[in-house]
Picture (tube, one colour):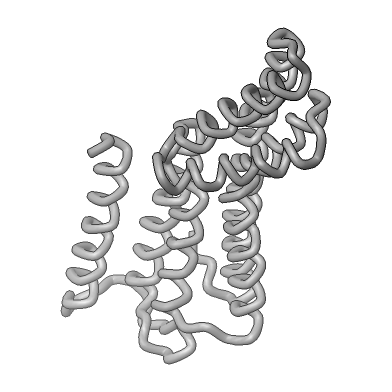
Amino acid sequence: MHPTLRFLILSILSASLVLSLSGCAQVSQWSAETFGTRGDLKTPTLAILQIILGLFMLVSLITLIIPGIPGITFIWLSTLIYGLVTGFERTSIIFMGIITALMLLGNVVDNLLMGAGARKGGAPWLTTLATVLAAVIGSFAFPPLGGVIAATLVLFTLEVIRLKDSQIALRSTGELLKGFGCSFVVRFFIGLVMIGLWIAWLVQSGQWLL
């Protein structure tokens, strides 16, 4: 198992253990104020939950620099866990909906940018469509880098057949790889926005304790 994935799994298990222990504690020096839509979350428990999920989101954001690690999905999962624990209301549902849309975008942005790179390199629309489809299928069939490998091979092969010139085909392939590289920057920005929306959710609901 990848060391980063092992760390993330251990973080989740540690979070569950800490929350269980905090819920069983009989004595607390913290305020007895409660939070959540059901009013059953004590201040210490909510603070611990926010700290653990916040750290988990930051680690997930950092893992975006590693190809194949679904950091965007981990950030989304953290916000979902928070919503399920504290309860959803109208405003939090809106925040969760926006975060979910960003998660979906973040998980396909590399395919979209690779397609844009292929177009920039001069590939026709049909070749670009075939390249994007190869990227999507490759991502599911051979993660983590199956998508970019499949897209590269399909684009180069189709362009060589079309142009009868491997040098020009390599130029289009290079633009595709540039698009793949740019996707890391875009995903990192999307991850930052998702975390910012989660913080805004907490502040708006009066649950921000950090």
